[in-house]
Amino acid sequence: MIWGYIGHEGAGKSAAMCYFDLLHIAKGGGLFTFPGFEVFNPNITLDDGNHPRLGKSIDMKEFIFSFSDEQKLRNVFVSMDEIQNFFGSDKYMTMYNSLITKYSMQRRKLNFGINYTVQSWNWIDPRLRQLTHFLTVCKDLSRTPWGKEAGLKRGQLIDLVTYDCKGFITGEEWTPLKHFNLNILPVRDWYDSYSTVDPLESFRKLVIKKPEDILDMREGMPRFNPLDDSPLENVPDDVREISQENNARILSKLEEQVDPATLIQVSKALRKVNAK
Image (cartoon, rainbow, N blue to C red; front, side):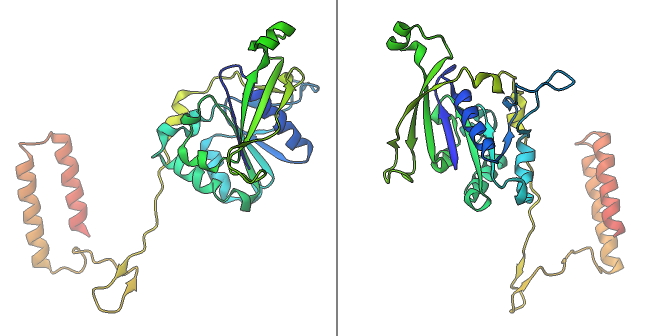
C-alpha cells in the first residue's frame, strides 16, 4: 500500500510513520529509508557509539534500480520523509517522477509499500496522489485548547485521523476511518528526521537510452530493424571525391564564422566520416 502522513511542521508526521514502520519490522518486513530519515534501535549501542539501523538507506537512483531485482522489494516499506524533496509536483516532467509512478502502479505485484510525509497535499506529484491508499492527518494535541488545559508538552501526544482515499475498507472514497491518539514519547528515540537533505538531490537527472524498433515498409513487405542505409557505405570513389570537395568548401566558409578550436573539431569529424 501507499500511505501518506500530512500535517504542519512538528505535527508528528515522522513519528507516526516511524511507528508504523516499526510495526512492519516487528512482523518480519523490511525497510528502506530515503535521506533525511533513519530508523534504529536505541536499546543497542555499537562499538562506535552508534545504534544499529533497522532499515537500509537508499537514494533515488538506488530505489529505481532496485526494481531490476524484484526480491529486494518484496515485503519492504520504502519510507520518505518530506517526499517533495525527491518526487515533488514541481518535478512532474522528470524521468524519476515518471518511473516511480509507473513502478508504484505495479506495487501490488511486487508486494512492497511506500510511506511518505508531506506538509501540503499539493506538493506531491499528482499521479502519486491518485495512487495513495491512505492519508493520515497528524495534529499535535499540545496546541489544542484541551491540550493546553491538560498541560501537554509539545511532541507528546498526537491525534491521527486516517482517510480511506480509494475506499478499499469503507467502500467510499475519502471516508474517515477510526482515529486515535498516539503517545510518541516512546517512539521518538527510534528515529532521526533532523538530518538535512541536499536540495541538489532533487535535481538529479535520469537519462534513459531507449531501444528502437524500426518498421521498414519501403519494399512492400514490412521488416523490423533493417540494415543501416548509410549514404557513406559502398559509395563510388568519384562520389567520395565530390563529398570531400564539398567538405573543403564548408570548412572554408566556417573559417570566418567560428573560432579555430571549433574549426579543428569539425575538420577532424569530417575526416573520420570520409575515412569510412
